[in-house]
Length: 149
Image 1 (cartoon, rainbow, N blue to C red):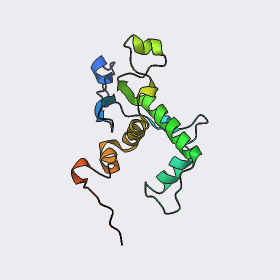
Image 2 (tube, rainbow, N blue to C red):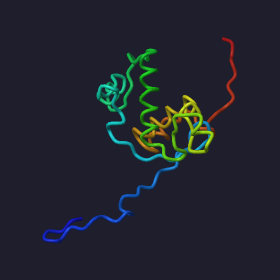
Image 3 (cartoon, rainbow, N blue to C red):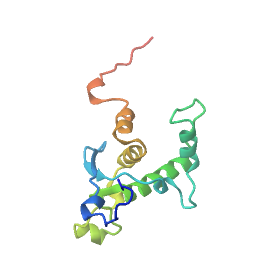
């Protein structure tokens, strides 16, 4: 914290370094993620996508009237990919097969749809949101049988 009447000096390099959080994905793989800024959640026009705006206005609560259109699904995937590009630092996201072959990182196509959505959920609410999104934890799964009436 800056004290009154104290001369300013440049911050050391260590003050600029941010450690990333390791996030385990539904695929079982792990990635390193940094927090993303609010601009990462905007579309190409600088707007928050409609499907996300509605959920933010309701503070994440769903409604019986909620529907997901094909357009919403595409918008969600585009948003997830923007967020991943902004926050995923290990492995790094690269654009070409040549960069991937050279070991510089992975292409977005290597992440499954569910992994992309999980990273979007993490970016919005961190580990608590990821935990809440796991509706059927492994320990609570049971074998169900169909019973005729």
